[in-house]
Length: 318
Ligand SMILES: NC(=O)c1ccc[n+]([C@@H]2O[C@H](COP(=O)([O-])OP(=O)(O)OC[C@H]3O[C@@H](n4cnc5c(N)ncnc54)[C@H](O)[C@@H]3O)[C@@H](O)[C@H]2O)c1
Image (tube, rainbow, N blue to C red; front, side, top):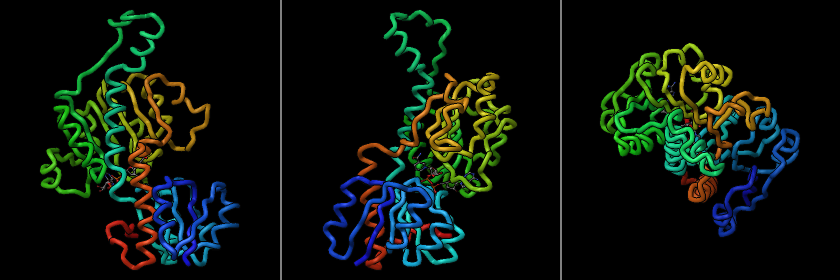
């Protein structure tokens, strides 16, 4: 019997796959504090993982843990050095998230470009067309978007941008020009140059030592005054203090954030009071459809691992 820890609840459609399989039992762990995971996780052979942290300190006591199945695609919450050294397999829900996240990017772009929140408030408060002259709204047609990071989500997003008649530049140093051209994008060789002409920038790369703080005050200074930045990737890629300062100084027009340096952000985080920012609580992938897809893929990856039929494409190469 393989004992599986479900660290933070997942959709029941995923858990049903375990219910049908006599070789697996599972327990849901809701208290994801380091102390509780150190206490409970050593009893399990595998686990699913949402956004909680699996530190080296936790993992070092989990001698029977063979697989960590991420419910999602990012894995900056796992001690990668530890699992590499100790031969623990890490999987992602590779095909589940792209549509939900790329649709969320379009939603944020549209809300900001069309002054949705302000106009909605005007109607509700009887200020019908009162500020029509001062409120700026934009069309997407013929505007340039820079997609920074062109993996699963970037490739899903480009189709939507082309559908809106946008020009698309792609910054991804790991992809050649032909691949980007095939999707209808133009390769940008340097992010410093690419940001200068972008009306929109959407971030879709992993958080790591190279991308941490990539979007900082110096880079934002090069952007157009009407530029809107969307980050659905990971907090930390955009420096939040620099972003807030840049918005206050009108260096750029607005920002849409699904992810934060610290989650949840502290209530005194200045971005929370900044009217030029719209936010969501790291929920861009949490559509009803995607929750089911992610839960099923998360559980399937665990079952496939123990049944020796795991698809290599879902294993994180470390
Ligand atoms: N908000 C959410 O709920 C949510 C959901 C899913 C994914 N994500 C995040 O979105 C991001 C992208 O996910 P994905 O599934 O498209 O990943 P992916 O692995 O398919 O693609 C990432 C791309 O980034 C590129 N890249 C790596 N380093 C780069 C750099 N320094 N500069 C530019 N490009 C770089 C890679 O070459 C790759 O093409 C990840 O950070 C992931 O954690 C967030």
